[in-house]
Length: 219
Ligand code: DX5
Ligand code: ZN
Image (tube, rainbow, N blue to C red; front, side):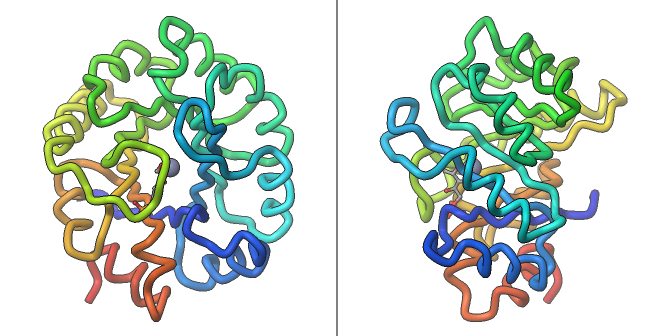
């Protein structure tokens, strides 16, 4: 099994103390920082946008994994790239036929391109654009809110995508976003996901450093 990377989601942070929150994640063993951008249209919730990415960029050297839950994401990718995103992920459901060209546009900006699939979207939506992707994100919950329960049935999709990624011979990261806990993290990674997003499991823990270690499978 690959080493598990943990990407805490700042959706569960105190937004009024974001600089400190992001700095604390660096000290807790986080590998990436997951940044959930929601527009109130693609998902029924609103978070923050480009300026938040630019501001947190000054508080961490960790890779910023920006998850765009917005309609017409291609309109904003250049500005998220300039703000300091390292990975920019767009939903297959938001892009439709434009998914491949949106991933290409992200790469043309010198950034890593991710395709995200909702729990009810088939693996084929990601496989169709695999050649343009550096990251595939499988949602373990319907996007919009932190702290939801992991939908077990996405496990099959994780395993299928992991097999295709191996077959491609390319280094493509496979991330599971939503519902990760200390109880299910290791079994999700065993299915082939090598990056686990964790919002409530990290921010809700009394000891965040211990929580990150346990999510990676250490006791
Ligand atoms: C869901 C977001 C997440 C998720 C993570 O819309 O994309 O990144 O909330 O939070 P937890 O780990 O609490 O499910
Ligand atoms: Zn997310």
